[in-house]
Length: 137
Image (cartoon, rainbow, N blue to C red; front, side):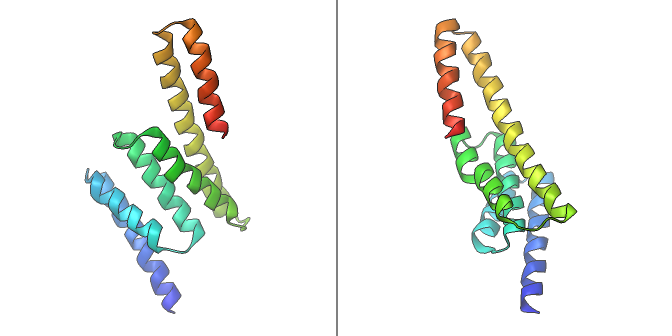
């Protein structure tokens, strides 16, 4: 019974964070999300919270890309992969988490490529290779 109340309470908190975000209270949403991620044990839900925090930080550009990748999106994927459930909802969450990581890294790559296009070809090739190697690491 206590577990169900705790689970319900954190689901309510996640929805509250989404509501803060929808109302434009970005810092409140992100801070609540970080609190939930640090104080909650269900891998399935924590993965969603990490993904949301990473997505929100990227959208409002309030954190650097390395922090977003290393502290939010990559952990979201790792945690989602650790969930052993094969039901439809769990699989959708895994796919959604992978999609957000791929979408964000693609946007970073395109942004990096555009900046390099304005600086010249030789430098572009060197930096793109470095960027790809950091994503793989």
